[in-house]
Amino acid sequence: MSGNEMKYIQEAFDTNWIAPLGRNVDKFEEELCEYVGVEHGLALSSGTAAIHLALKYFGVGPGDYVFCSDLTFAGSCNPILYQYANPVFIDSEPESWNMSPIALEKAFEWAKKENKMPKAVIIVDLYGQSADYDSLLPICERYGVPVIEDAAEALGATYKGKKCGSFGHVGIFSFNGNKIITTSGGGMIVSNDEEAIKKMRFWATQSREPAKHYEHKEVGYNYRMSNICAGIGRGQLEVLDERILAKKEVRDRYDKGFESLPLSLMPIPAVSASNYWLTVIILNNNSSTTAADIIGNLESNNIESRPIWKPMSLQPIFNECISFTHCEKSFGNELFINGVCLPSGSELTLEVQESIINNIKGLF
Ligand SMILES: *Cc1c(COP(=O)(O)O)cnc(C)c1O
Image 1: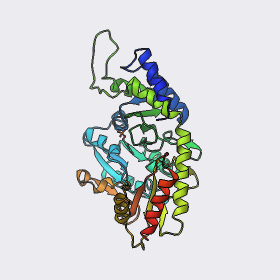
Image 2: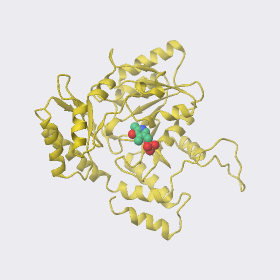
Image 3: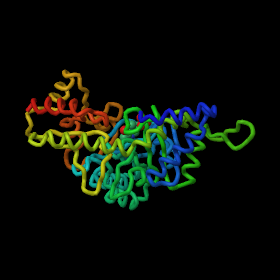
Image 4: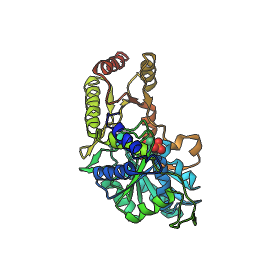
């Protein structure tokens, strides 16, 4: 917490606007939109709820197809199943570790041939870094398919100077506890399409028709953010840029510390500025030390680290789904096997980080 969250929560208590909605929700939507550079925002109970509403908005229903980045968290694609549709997973490229334009093109060619055009494409900005939108968006445009930008991990990151979350027809953010800023739990959907946000706002508030009594013509959801959570978000947003700077320093120290080791950090293309949410490493193919060795060693020193996301196409729940790879073999699988997400908190002390670096160096 930054310290200012209590000020906004107190305001909610003082005015007795605890729920539903209230001034903090309106202001949080406004302030986040201004930060990202989009016109309209809708604060929700989670990032997953945001993706669900976006899929519904693009008309995704039973039997439909939706393309989605393969290397991601399950929250990106579970909502495809909520709508009884079929996910098709798209591999990562080595340059950015994000969706491969080559694999995306392959998927569209398949869809065209099989008459299985997707209703939407979910492009994820992985670990706080933008996908290559100048390559990906023209492909989706050529096939006339709308893009949902899953920027859950990438608030504050940019691509060619433009903020992540502003590239798709709609963008989504998460404020879950593990993200770069949190509302304890929450999400937001943003767009320049006012009608789209209006419709999703309606669905998110139980599809209550404008009438004095409770009138419903469509199925609705209880997906809004509480005024207390939004107060936390407002306080967090104030320190986002500071936090990005602190996280950049964490990454720079790892980068320097690992100079001579057979591993590399997640690459940052020249056109991108990461928010450095997580520092992630991948071991070279010739390294005799494995990702499991590193995770095991850190764990025995009471330091938590994690493997890279397990690609969705490898998950038992999605094992019957079709997927398209960048090369012959899946690049995402290689990242999963050889990668480690390192402790990257903005409050990581120099001493603790030094001991992490030394532990890892000692394994080589
Ligand atoms: C966290 C996350 C989500 C889901 O957000 P929640 O707020 O936890 O529902 C979706 N996509 C990605 C890439 C995420 O990291």
